[in-house]
Length: 113
Image 1 (cartoon, rainbow, N blue to C red):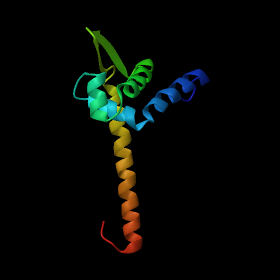
Image 2: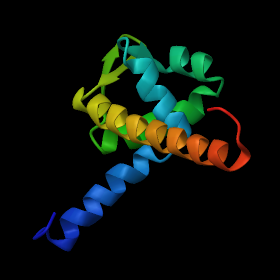
Image 3: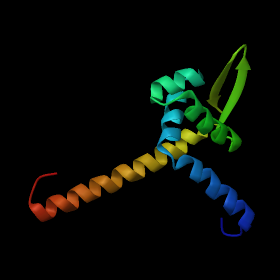
Image 4: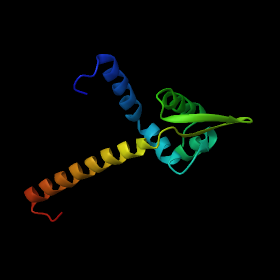
């Protein structure tokens, strides 16, 4: 990123902004096991199909998911599975931060962690 133009940084920021929404992370997690249609995703997420469609449109625009129409249904799948490596890296980092916080609190309270 050292010599990256501002336009590229703005694209990267927009990509991460897509990932900054819990519903979209939930959708990514559901698609980990394979493709699903909007109705399935809506039911599993507990949201309306319109809401899930809006999220999927944004995710598609940024290259996270691919859509394929079959008859009257549209199915979505992960466009680039490396997104899971990124998510796993971030989740691991957050887990380590939480462990350190718990250890720090335990040190102050004398409680085991």
